[in-house]
Structure formats: structure tokens, C-alpha cells
Image (cartoon, rainbow, N blue to C red):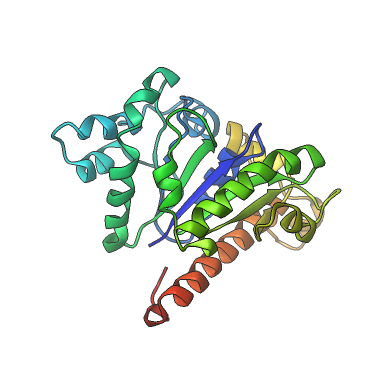
Length: 274
């Protein structure tokens, strides 16, 4: 069981789209937790097009702190995402509820750890860093925290300060290997190696710039159809789309990084599932 947190320094580099894409393509059970305190579920409004009424949301978890059972609330607030092994806990409905989230994040980090017995991984969409009620305890407790950034100069420069801040935080906690970068877009103008040098963090994974496929996750668009060549060779155009291939590669890179870090810190953990 692993907890993976995605966050951004500023703007909209693709955190939510990447988070839902990873969750829906994850090969084992995974919980997608929308922890962005700004309010509004990107999955409910985007991928599910506002057609699904959720059983609960993150605010139910906050209410469970007052004498309730946080694990039971977590199960009650989650909903399955059709056609996948993923489930979702939607974000709060309004930024006005953010104050209720402040005392939630630390006990929730501990509760998520208890999901290890179920073999369920967790992907957290933490939104933009530095906001009021940002889920810092979830970030600090992550097996892998990924700062998401695009590959253009503006995005890289905006990410630099937060990259250094995160690197220092994890290093002080003795978990320097638990933080890295996830880039979105083509290596233009900067390649992953150059971005890693500038931000002084390793690029764990890169997600392809594929707007047609990204629209499936961000606004519930139908998957792009197969080309005539793909139909001729009986290939699945959606499965072979650049975004889909990069998400599968990102999963392998993420789990490989977590495994390597775990084995480095605890050699006795070699061979255990992550």
C-alpha cells in the first residue's frame, strides 16, 4: 500500500487530470482523495460531467472527527469510479468549508496508513501548495510526493521555490527520497534532465501532452477513436494514445521509486508489495 500525493506550485499544470488518469489506469485498487481546499470536485464536474450524486465528500471526514469513526467515514464518503478499480472521495463543495479541514489532515494521514491491510493504494490531489488549509500533513506523510510542473520556462521558474522548500522539508524528516517531480508536456524547451537540474529534484515521471485524451479525464469527453491504421491492425486507439501510454509508464516509475526508497530505508522490506 502506498500514498502518492500530487501538488502544484501555481496555475493549472494538470494535477487533477493526471491524478484521475492515474487512478483510472491503476492496475490495483486505489482511492483517489481530492484534498484541494479551494472547493469543487474536478472529478465530479469534469470526468463524471456532473451526472453523479456523491455519497459524501471530504467534509464528512472532517465531521467524523467529532466523536465519529474516521475509517468508517472514509468508507462511507467514497464512491466507485465506473469501469475501474478506483474509488473517489470528492473535495469539499466550497472554499468556505476549508477551515473545517485544518484539524482533519493529520489524523487522516494516520487513517490512510491503516488501509495497508486492504492492499489499497491512495492518490491524493493536493491542489496548489501554500493555500489556507492545504493538506501539508498528507504531503509530509506521503510515500512519494510529486510536484507537478509543465516544461515551459514560466512553469519551471514558478516551481523552483516550492521544489527547494519540499526538498528541505523531506530532507529534515530523513525522507529525501520521498519527493520528486512529475512533468506534463513535451520536452520543449526543457528536457526532464534539465528540469531536474534547475529544480534540484529528480523527475520521477513525465506525462504526455495529449489534449484529446486529457479531455476524457478533465471534462468527460468520449475517448478518441482509433485511426484507420489502428483499425487495420486491430489496435485499440484509446489504449495506445500517448497519454495512456505515459500514464502506464508513470505508474511503473512511481511504484519503482517507492519500492527503491523503501528497500533503501528498510532492507528487510525487500520483496514486499508496495
